[in-house]
Length: 276
Image (tube, rainbow, N blue to C red; front, top):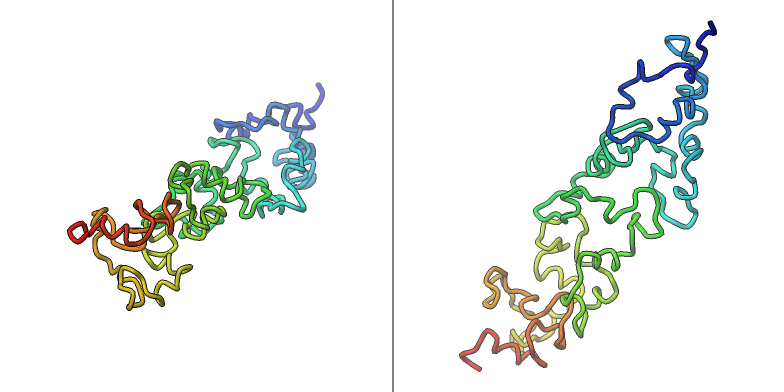
């Protein structure tokens, strides 16, 4: 009787059944263990290996025997650091797992292994972040966009955020130029609507001249704009501020007015009906 000399002659799962118990199985398993582990003598226990675990190649070079390397590298695109370092198994189990795409963990938990969790928590959390849908916005391997985004920021945000609020006659410059992240944090924020800053402080980042020049609500002889935290008379759940009179994204009226009017005086009567 011929002696058993290598893994192809026996069923490796007799001892290593735990490697194939996951719901998602690597297609290579059906091709036989020696597809990857060619340098192992299964007759000797403990096994004698040639190289690391008897693998026919090291790191990503082994994976690229089946997976097209061009999909994971580029001189012109942004490549995820673990991918560029050939660390495939830092995210993927090479045998089987209970997660999709042979991931070691659910996506949210996997990403948090390297990315600081504090950046993804706060009073306001972007729904895709809260649900662990990191790959809805980020490509896990490479991308032609910065930060591995699946599309440019403008196109990415409008996949979910679209409609009249962003497409009226007059558009806020950051909106028109697709600079959503000039005002909004993409993951989590201490402020409502994922804003960088609270209330009027955000507007002042670009519109600092309002504090120095006369403004109709303060009177033409006084500088500044007294939006001091009172309740918005037309939106009782909101604090009175810049967005009480101005739309943040787009408007059918000049100066990004929230309500119909051609001048600031036209807006006064919206709240001060008794004096108009």
